[in-house]
Structures are given as C-alpha cells and as structure tokens.
Length: 476
Image (cartoon, rainbow, N blue to C red; front, side, top):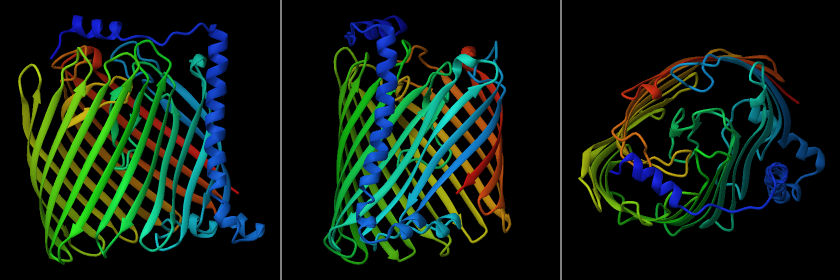
C-alpha cells in the first residue's frame, strides 16, 4: 500500500508523548505503576470474594484458596528468533502464586470444570509473579506477571453480570493470543525483534439478559491496554463496545445480530474508528445439526495519512454433534477488502474445527483461512492475508500422568500501512510435546519440548528455535 519511505514518515509525524522526567524517575515510575497495577488486580479480586465470605466460615474459605510455587528451567536455542548471530540461553523462573475458585480445592485439583452459571455467584482466579533469571544474558533478567479472572453474578434467573480479565507481563518474542475467540496454541501475528518486556491487560465486563429459553441480549465492553518500552514498537489502547442479540422465532429458525464499535489509539501511528456488523440466520434440523448463512461488514476509518478500508464477507456453514463428546463445524465463504486508495484484496474464507472431549483423551483440530487484522500489538501490522492450522491432543496415560502432542502451521502475507517490508510472506510451523506427572498430591512435574521454524521471502525474518522446559510445581 505505502512504500517504506512513507511508512517511516508516518511514524515520525505522529506526535510523541513529551516528558521532562529523568531516566531514573521514569524507571521508578514504571516499576511503581507495574506494582500498583498488580496490587490493584489482586485487591479487586479480593473484593469479589465478599459474597462467598459472607456465606462461609474462615475454615471453609480456606478450601477454596490454594497458594502454590513453580520453579522451571528452560533451554532456548535462539532467544531472539534471529536468522544469524543466535543467542542461546538457560532461563530460570521462580513463580509464587495463588488460585481462588468457588469450587472446593479438592475438586479443582481433580480437574473439575468451573462452577456452573446456575450458581448465583462464581469465580476462578489465578495470579502469579515470576522472577526470571538468564544464565548468560543477565541484562534480560526481569519480573513477569500472569493473572486470569473469570467471574459472574446472577441478579435473577434472567439478568447476569460477567467479568473476564487477563493480565500479562512477559518478554516472549511472539505473544500468545488469550482473546476469548482464540484457540489453544494460537499466537499473535506481530513479534518483537529482541527480548523486550511488555505489559498487557484486557478487561471485559458484560451484561446479559435472557428473555426466552434461547433468546439473549447482551452488551460486552473491552479495554485492551498494551505497553512496551521500545523505540521500534509502540503502545496502544483499544476500547470497544459490542451489543449482541440472539432470537429464535421457533425451535428451528433463529437469528443473531452483532455490532462492534472500536476506538483504536496508538502512540505513533494513526488512530482509527472501527465498525463491524454481523448478521446470521440459523436453521436447525435437529438438536445435533444446524446450518447457517452469515454476512459480515467491517469498516476502518483511520486518521490521515493512513488508508481507510472496508471488508465484506458472506459465508455459509454447518455444525454437527457426532456424539456427546465429539462435535465439529465448517464455515466457508469469500471476502474482499476495498481500500480507499489502491487495489482490492480478496480470497476464500474458511473456518473448520473438530473437537473430541472424552474421559481419557482430548483432541482439537482447527483450520482457518482468509484475512486477519493485527492491531494493539508490538508491530500493529494491520490487514493481513493468512492461513492457519493447529492440532492438539492430550491423553491420560496413567492415573497420575498425562501426555500431549501439538503441531501448527501459519502462512501470512502482510498488507498493512505500517509494514516496512511490503509483500513479505512468512511460513511458520511448529511441533512439540509435553508430559505431566503427579508425584504427590501436592507436587507435579512437567516437561515441554518444541521446535519452531519460519521460512520467509525476507531472509532477515527467517529463524529456527529449539526449546525445552522442565517445571516443578508445589501446591499447598
């Protein structure tokens, strides 16, 4: 869309946040903000315990609370994912943390599901801090944060409030995608070029009203904050609101209407206002099989000088439950992106998934293709064409031991305004396995090993990576 010279000019023209603070003051302020955010996260979570505390004695409350500590040793053959001058290292992480769930601790350790929505109040909280030490590159030492919260409150059988939040501070080159629509093992398209700690917090409250057995009106709000201390990458903030209506005229015919309004704020590149509308009609043959037709219209209105665009995507699909433990869905269609200036980008869209959840074996296969938008990340690559396949299987080999395998493949072509390598294509594939063994009821050992490789038409983007992680977790 735009050449390299104009991309760099766009970055320079964006006003910078001015500051008169000294580097020492900024460093102290950054650490203070990080600590205060973590403290606020834990405090808000504790306040949500009040409904449970009011209904339980302190002795009973302890059954829902579980402190733990994890120690892991990692070997990484290419910590910066570079094609040459690779840096290998051994990374030690000590992570104390705690879990709190409205399920008793004994049930959580047996892998039970989270409390059902029929309960008036429910919560699952997991929070830990990691002290990370590099054996060779000691300048990379840092403190990581990981927190996840899922909670709900039912005002009455028809009206409910839900809250989902996740907090992460990491230095991973490729960031894992923890969004509600992401599948396990999915990563964001953007990446950094060195081990740079970043911070992300996603806060998603929602309200849902049921006015029939399957008729639902809900509103979801999303605040997605991304911060990174780097001149190459930029901070960003997403604020979006998403009303959604599902209405069934009768047992066979139903519709879903979905609208999303997004405000994208970026540190240097142009901000945007986004709209997305999706309409779906579903016909249900029986409780196990249904077909649907869907149309999505998406619009992105950028500040000058970036290029506005809209996307149209009609599709058809079918979902089917082969058994109580095996289900699948197929959705396919066509999309076309119309930029304000330049040529149209189009192609086939598809989303195929198959999931098996049995007593001892679980597997999931997902195939996706079409387009993706990469915003609120390290690079903010914008509109991309992509194909992705992910497969994962987990099996309980013995009563106290589980093993798993996974593989993935991604094909990505970049089109976004801020991409400094136009027409770049990456082909990324990975394979790996894991095993976990419960040595004692309170002590678990696990081992993860993986290999990842990127073949790109830009030599500077190529890399290979071997990775192995041994972890010991003690729960009290």
